[in-house]
Image (cartoon, rainbow, N blue to C red):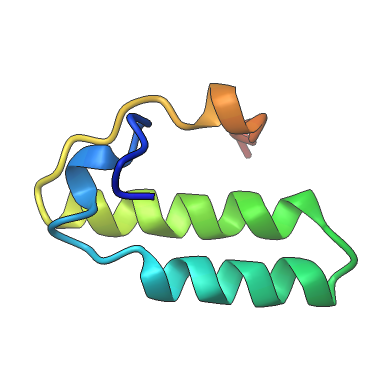
Length: 70
């Protein structure tokens, strides 16, 4: 939410989170609550924010989404 003081707050005015949120909600519900879907959507939103020059703070720790290295 826009009032939330989280790691994506600076991005909300630059990249609207509504479409990401709706897509995430649908995909997570359709997959039985798969956390991998949530992490993928958050990663996509973070990447999109960074491409628009927004600094995104650590979102992985509070969401529990670990970064997998090849």
